[in-house]
Length: 87
Image (cartoon, rainbow, N blue to C red; front, top):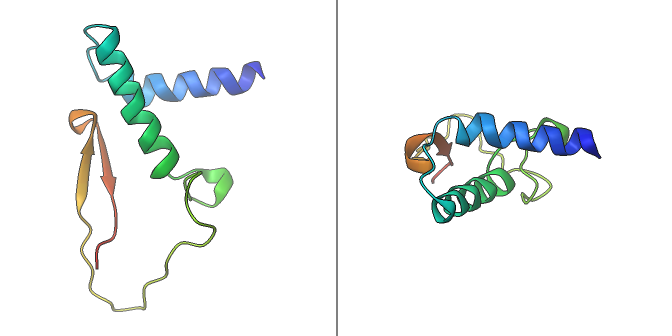
């Protein structure tokens, strides 16, 4: 259990808190809530074949040669960039 906690804390620190100056407790709670939503809904995980925990079992497959847009959403003020296919 300790290894899981250490890994989660390290991920939070490396991906967010090393790049954001936290000013108070309310700011820390907002930043961590935004990171949690990104981590569970969009961030790829190796143990799940590059799918996030809350993703459906199979990702959508686009036919070869289909033009698509790949818009970027900035998380934590631009610290993390999130990309998602748009038709």
